Length: 195
Image 1 (spheres, rainbow, N blue to C red):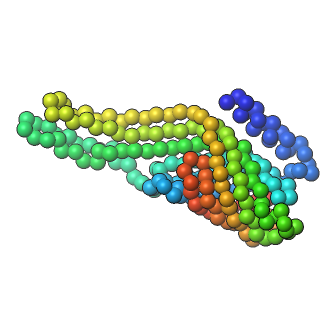
Image 2 (image 1 turned 180 degrees about the vertical axis):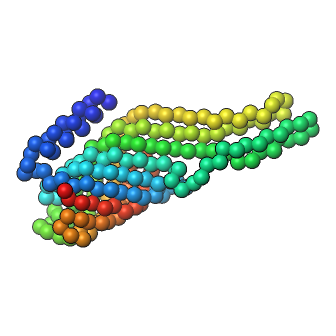
């Protein structure tokens, strides 16, 4: 973890120290994962561009709490000869964050000197925190009803892959679409501004 943080600090210092290389931008992304119901993804990226190459630092957040509501109510009645009455028993939730060093190559700029269109392919690598929360149930015939809410959180390394298309509305602002992501492949929109 210390090596990743030192690498990020070194990259930031390098970006600010080189005036010729430094063409800063900020980019915001928002989308929905392709294989997760009710989930969403947000990403903030700060970096620099040089000809056809982007190099930056990205902070992203993925969760399935964007579009669903949680109800924590459960009613269980168990009398002799009766089965438990269960309502709203199942509960699950995930939340993933990552801080990555990212890079991308503009395929069109490799062949065209200037264009309002950009088609980029890239990826990144960094540190991530994964958090899962879920419910379990056990209703054996010979004992009382049992309901448990479990949570697990861990820190590790992660990578990402992404492809995007964008169109420059002006010299400083562009909008576009992307596919890819960190933990779950997603599709979405991005807004980019040169600083």
